[in-house]
Image 1: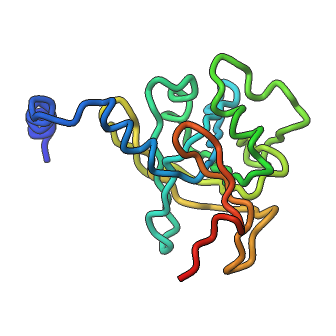
Image 2: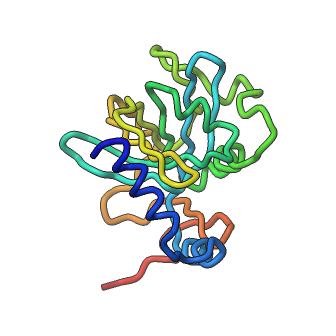
Length: 187
């Protein structure tokens, strides 16, 4: 597809009737998502944001995808970083989730709560798990950037055994929730 074809497609897409933003947001308010914090440093200091848009794409090669809203204060750095760290959170990490979701603050002011990997990326301490990734592709989608990243290294601090409920943290209807034995459905 040429640049001209892409521009024509964008114009056609913009002129096509679509669902109002409030209706679209209402759909996803009722759709719970796992909670992650994505961090990076493209040479101007560390940034982080909380995201529920992380999804597995492929196990071979190990690829994941996430989106970055242009409205996020971290979007500029995350849109340029060659590598990122995706932190997979559980209920014990809700403070990290809230930190990444709070605007207008220095998310790295507490030096004891994070360190740098030997490769330079910021990583929050003692979270359930994290994965260091190399960004392999980016795509503009509306007011967001879709990022495809290849998993390079990971660390799991706490993990539930297969079939056990664990302490998963999910975001649903604008609030944090715990998945556990009480929320398990049989059959």
